[in-house]
Image 1 (spheres, rainbow, N blue to C red):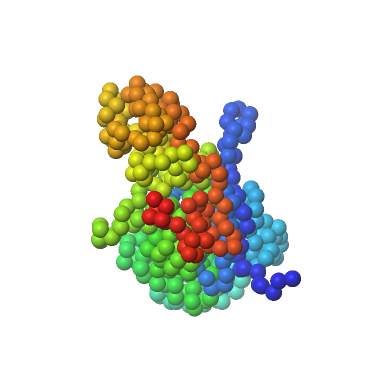
Image 2 (image 1 turned 135 degrees about the horizontal axis):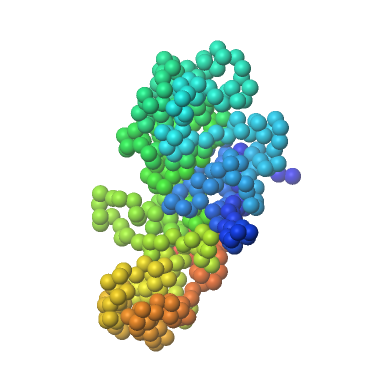
Length: 420
């Protein structure tokens, strides 16, 4: 039997799917796979950042942890106990010990309740009936988050956005939690106030030894605040590890795209790895294999294809742009094949006969308005391992779900430069 203590909070292959129903009988015709096999853990006093684009499933993870959404499969465990099986006093204890800070502080409070009443409400719900004791706790917490004990009688509209977020932090702390889930806690605030709120959260975390799950799309916020980071795309974790490792040596192409999309004062600092397409696939019908492959700028070519990287990328972008329906009208409506090729930077001469024929047929189909034929023609000769097989994240090393990742090469992931 292992002597290793259980993590404070652990997600094990968690799935949260939503039924899509149609017709007067409301039969299930599909499922939105909002969260689709997510695993990670958080230790006492640790801060884990969960990052990804909007629609990646981050907030659904938070809601499922809090039992606001029902898990389809997998488990959320708190101190080793499955949360879905908690009842009575055990469930009551979990609800007290895991608290949420929402994204928009303007939606966090009832306009009919004073700030003192709002912050004290969790104490009342959890059985503290002594009015004087509740008032003393609330006044102490308001002062700890930089406000005044005299603010208890004021209403939410009397405070700025940053002040309201401080009050939300006080309310999250009022039950003395072990875990705070902060869902985009600074995204509705200006940059100066963001810094103040993050500094407050960091001080509170250290002072109370509370674990924080910080959900954010802001890489810089995660870099400054978190110990570890998990990168999420279309319901799955594609990479996780220490912040210093993942954000300084990103191994998954999606992580690189996120990092390289962060504005920089030095445009020569890096080469932008923009995705092949901007459209995030429908979570009700995610791509097979690696879910990022339809947008991946580092898509692996088929074994039978030997093309220079820029040419292969141009062909792949051509295919997936058509597939995503992103073709600009001026290109879709042109009568010249050359216009199509120029738009995607596809050269006249392609050194692979099957690819060259497919591109010629596809450009002709686009000019003729037959996008479906163009997609099918390109798909027949460009299918890659990335769309055939789901990459497995190694659990005995740095977890990276990418076919390009190889932790046996000098202990480092292969990058674009290594493989091109």
